[in-house]
Length: 34
Image (cartoon, rainbow, N blue to C red):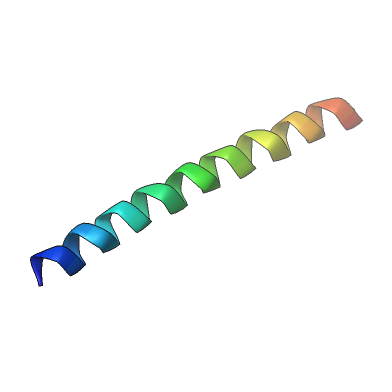
């Protein structure tokens, strides 16, 4: 059970990092299009 918790914690962290990357990429594109 603790292993599952660790895995989901890591997955959440990875997803958050990807969201951050997407957000900065999107805002960079918005700046570029202006």
